[in-house]
Image 1 (tube, rainbow, N blue to C red):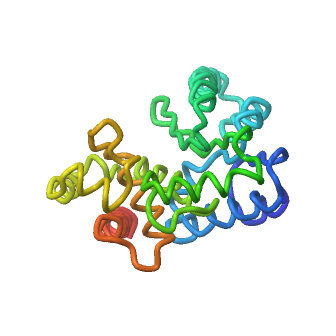
Image 2 (image 1 turned 180 degrees about the vertical axis):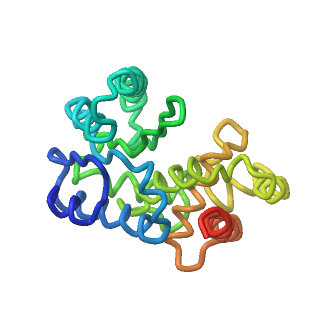
Length: 233
């Protein structure tokens, strides 16, 4: 599987050794679909795998990316260690995955970390299905593919800064918290507050997985397309 990822130029480092094979295949296929549509995201897709894998491979991947620039490596390593500690706390609260982007000077290091403790094949699909039924997640987003699409949506937002754009703000201000909760997901507005980054990620997940995405997901999906084309073409 790792050799295949190398051939596909999938990520700089992949560590999914402790993840069930069926889940690994689905997760990689999901991430690849976004990378093929938005290939520039690959520049910040440096790590994909478990938290334990990041702890084991962090020195190796930084050397691969930055050679013998030890000052830069040590600076980014400090940020990675802080990220790892943060993830451990969040993963104890049953978060399934986290997308991240670390920036040191003009250098970036990003990717997706999976919570291996939450990847029990007997329960994860039931959990995802229940979250959709409760409205916590968007419609048709009860799969591993949708879970990874959500995190890839975060990476797209990191790259394109959609959630901070005037076009996005003008659009989302047309909708109340109640409307977003009912027509996207309650996760987007936890605590009764619009979470712009989560609105983008949840919208992207629905845009990729619902054959007929609802208005917020549909519009934000098109917004991502426009901003990507404007920046890179």
